[in-house]
Image (tube, rainbow over all chains, first blue to last red; front, side, top):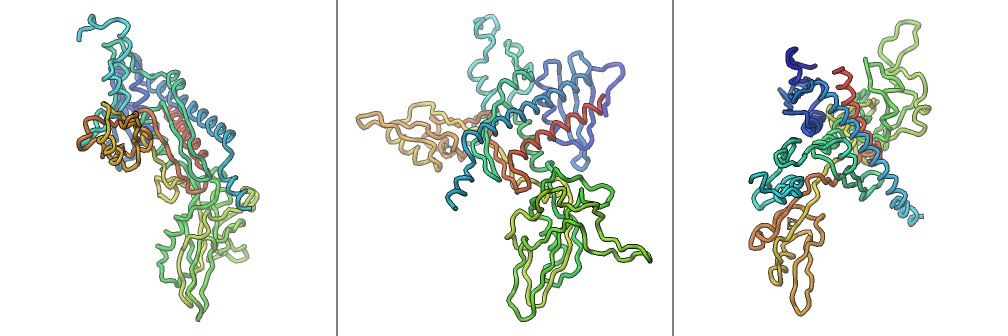
Amino acid sequence: MEHGSVADSTASSFSIMEEDHTLANSVRFVLNQDPRVAFCGYSIPHPADNKVNIRVQTTGDPAKDVMVDALQDLMVMCQHARGTFDTAVADFRANKPMERMDIDLNKS
Amino acid sequence: MDMDDVPTQQRNKLPDHLERQRTRVTCKADAPTHTQGFQYSGAFAAMGVDNSVSVEKFCNSFKIKINRLTEDDMEFDMIGVDASIANAFRRILIAEVPTMAIEKVFMVDNTSVIADEVLSHRLGLIPLDADPRLFDHISDDVPNERNTIVYKLHVSCEKGSQRLTVKSGQLEWLPEGSQLLMASAAQGEKQKTYTSFGQSQKNISGRSIGVKYKDITIARLGPGQAIELEAHAVKGVGKVHAKWSPVATAWYRMLPEVVLLKEIKDGEAEELVKKCPVNVFDIEDLGNGAKRAVVARPRACTLCRECVMGPTGEQVELRRVRDHFIFTIESTGALPPEVLFTEAVKILEEKCERVISELS
Ligand code: SF4
């Protein structure tokens, strides 16, 4: 849910249900690294509520667009991280056959 | 400092002390300094230095190096990522990657000394060797072969015999579903059990779904005591209950960097080497009896800060590299650790996707 004003689209608070620091802190990081963002922060209003509020103020672009871009960037970063990780695992396996196998050989 | 004083070739590089504050956490004898870092993209705009991280920049600098990978634990270096993202992965691994765990226990008979609820709790914590990706979350309480795994435990200790230890391996998987009959069947109707399986679970899994470790003690029975129960496992996540957490632990530490600010020689060098409990320092022979301390194994540093206290304190600086994480995952067995990590990253992606679709 977005709380903004009709007159000024450059500042909005986003209230996201069922999320916590996991998403909010990552998104805050990505938003802060975006040159279009003037201010960004998040808070969990009450630890018993399962929601976070993310505040975004921009230098001119609509806050919602910047937020969506940040989420998309985060997704691309995750995909890249996953790809890199999978290659690293494959490389590791190719170069070093599982240690477990050696142990099994010794046993038999 | 006035901007005009700065030679142009230096404009796009931060001065050393700021670069260090940006990329390192320094651990002093009493407390660490510069723990926050510089998040804001325009933090150094006045100096002509761009502090933003675009996706391309991230993709170019992100690296993963696997150090150890076994069946149920792994360690790898994750380089070029902010703590907020590394922490998101860690949090998801612990609390949001789903697994299967025993949630409902139907107690037919329990004459052992261990109370029903304690016994049920113990059963819940037993890691199951079931791939959670094959199952759905249970919705509106109809247990079927797609969302419930059923186990039976029926043990008794004969009168006059030795005491008996009940192990997790004695849980028997029921691929056809529950064998317990519901109390009241209307006349002429077939009696219903507590699950409604459409097919055998053997078709779904391809192998038997047992417990991961067969030697976990569940209870001990004295002569004449017995336990008969049926346990139903469902899919869930660690934030609801720790029994669903797929990892024993998942943690990271930042890469330690130990720097000798001055040359440390002879007696002082030996003292320094002796001080460090994990042997970070070594002695280098300079010939004709002279010795010098060198940093040989900075990775082993546990940050006990022993070396920055006392007389050598001024000569040693302890730092941590802000974007280099040594990540360790210990799986409880349902999924191998490398799969857990990919699953965790996928979950973060799904979270983004959900919010994007809600916003547009
Ligand atoms: S902080 Fe402790 S472990 Fe690290 S180098 Fe110093 S004495 Fe060794």
